[in-house]
Image (cartoon, rainbow, N blue to C red):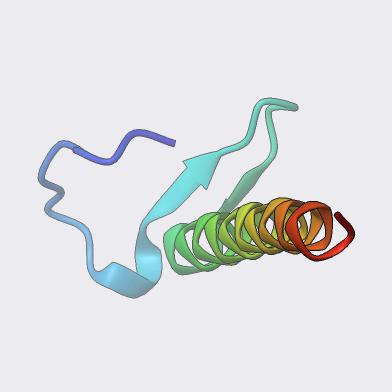
Length: 63
């Protein structure tokens, strides 16, 4: 979904987005899903960063 969308004359509840599979879903639901995906991706990145930090700390302490 594009971050910059064309202005619409429709009410927010009437706006919809078309998914890659061609289904129409409410715009609010599309935005909610995008937000959840970003949160999960950010959480996964933070977890990987923590694992890298733990690994490097173990290498220092293990010597």
